[in-house]
Length: 94
Image (cartoon, rainbow, N blue to C red):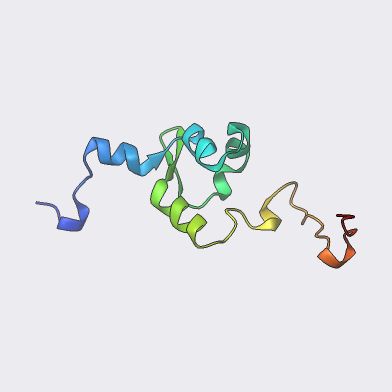
């Protein structure tokens, strides 16, 4: 008998616990191509055979913590994006 914490989840529970790249793109409201481009850097990513899947609980916990899914240096071509201080933005004329 397996340890109680090691019992495999039911197949329905497993399907709900893991997200495909398309499911993750829908959850994050980003294009699937964005997920494909950054899959190795996304927390909770695991390779299942030749496919990538994402732990729903890890993704949700990360997003609820208020942290960005990817660190700024992990986005783009490895260069940190320029950040403009709010004091340098033009004031609105409202």
